[in-house]
Image (cartoon, rainbow, N blue to C red; front, side, top):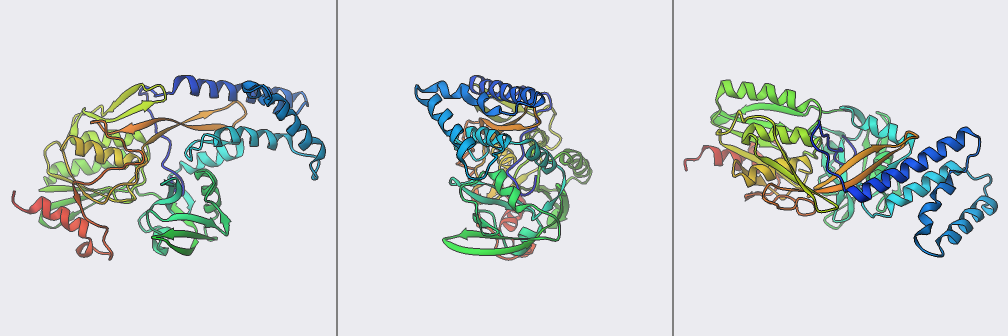
Length: 407
């Protein structure tokens, strides 16, 4: 997904982790509210706000406060009549926003439709993944050859404004809504980089994700670059693996730099090509219940020497792959510390077409190392290259050296 946070993990039949009590309560409440509103709207009694009064019983004075605020808005707010539907959705959005989690979001029916479109492999935007770093909205990674990369936006840039609108306190999905737009139009983004404020005017384009590419480097080393874990990644990677089995390269460099993540199951199965049916990632929910994800395939590349390249733009599913390969000692990790996005979101459809995206678990490496907020520290730290081209790519050159020098 482009111009957004890493996508919601796909499960493909694997057991779904849930924070049982809290998640069930939220779903039941949202289902009740949605059903209540739908039923009363059909009767012409559009006052869904009173369905929220169940929450006001938490403290003795809350019902009176709720009724007073609602009455004042409906009777005295200067711009009458007020839209009860907007008040209702605003109230529900406030429930989720109060969690203080930038990856948990309530989508109105219209926003839910737009979010679904975001999961397409081709969208219109600037080609940058947005997330939270150090509790601030930031660029996770600009995709290769995207407008964001060409204009000079970099992984780790903290977002300040979008078209002069302050976005520092907005959710990721709200920020994405302001950045994305029709191809050919422009958006001005102000960021902070190493304490310096920078402004970029970017022309939006139609972005198509070519998720996996490969090429042969010197000394019979294969470079496999994965820029996103999406629906097409495994089929393309399968073709590449079959080619590698025929060519028998001396080593493989798996480039996950500036890969913002994607579908969980895709990253798990891709990792399985190198380590087989070992545990790839662990998840822990609100109740402390832990589950593990393993690939459902045997490794086809269990022995070929492997180096994985990562940087600050490697996030989410990329960190899962790097962490698993590092814990299993299957690969040497080279580059800089990864982004540190290791939380799990579930997307729940609600009766009126709205949706709830809620963080329900945290990711850990097979050996129990936390990913969220910590990232993956490389075995060999090499700073990001400052110039383009293979010869100037210090991380790539270090990987080549590790694979070609005699032990």
